[in-house]
Amino acid sequence: MLDEKFIIGGIATLIFFASWHDPKLYRETLIEWISWTFWLVFGAFCVWAVAMIVVLLQLPSTLEITAMEAAIEAIEKSKIPLLWWVYLLVLGLISSIANEIASRREKNIEEDAS
Image (cartoon, rainbow, N blue to C red; front, side, top):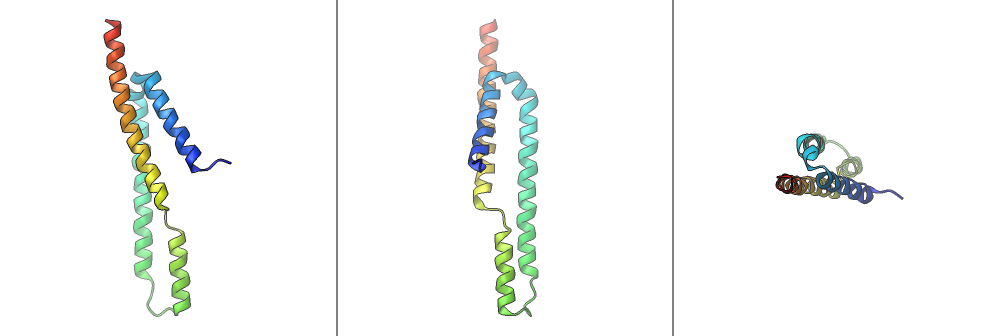
């Protein structure tokens, strides 16, 4: 069954393949899309995390204990898992490494051509 590990692994493989196979395309086009997507998802994660904190702080103290516990439990369940944050940062690191690979590969191709 497909889970996030397979999806992240597939994305990482595609990033490395693109940076090795066509470094010029990767550096001119793909890295912009990857960076834009990374920052978009990172921003969405941050907004969601801040929203969850605000909701927790806005819970009225007049709620019954059982209702308060149920509300806190529901909010905790809707938070973004730590593993997703790690996956996002790993993909950001992978794209940076792939950018360096593409840069060096592009230099090697230019040296071989001359």
